[in-house]
Length: 362
Image: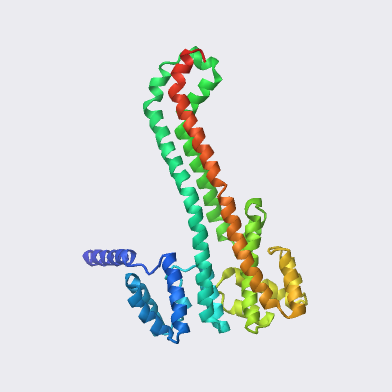
């Protein structure tokens, strides 16, 4: 009996290991962009969705197993957007394609999502290129500092008398810095880890609206939070209004199909306020999660029957402005890293020159 149980346990363990090491269906972001653009072209030429996926297995043989997964899911009746998460697409992209399909704009949505992904890819590459060299230099210098502490510090301290150590504050500072370098480094890592755990175990587990309201109070990311929330809602309102939906139909659709948690939660707030008789621009203003301009745009759009067009134009502007602002602020990290590198180089130089400086009566 025990042998049988052991065999069953080993078989379960083996099957688990097989699941872990099986091929993933996730696609790199560059391939995601190519897939959506190609699918848009094929569908525009009159191919069916199944025919397009089958044809793409020949065009992208490296990810044939991922496309076969999509094709198999379509064959058993699953929708295309339900496969996107398995392919590595973000929740926002999945939601945008799903709601576009409900509006009858599926083909156009593929091109729009691909364009947005390409824009984010370009901005991310610019930031990575700007930060990768100074980051590499900083890591290399930290390793070098630890090496100097291990091999040079004992020899250098042997040249310095106790009287000199007590009298010269600068000498004492340099020696103490290198002596307690592991503790300083460990404390920095510990503080960063504690902050990350607080973010992971508390903030990231809150409902999205509560989470965004917390972000709204943090000066560094407050403007990003407002722009991101406004972009998401303006994009969907514009798309739905352009397809002939009323505001009540929009919030009902967002609640019935909770693809995007943020849109689902904010739609419940909007619905309750609308039922209470509050106009949409005032509802948007009361939430205090959106830009001050957004309710004005919606109000003007209602007066001129151009709400859809104005929301779509405004959402695109917010999207590009948000990425530009993030890239601009992230670029400030580069000079900070270079200053850190300069300080570390100076510390290394002073440590090596310390015996000469002390002998000269520094």
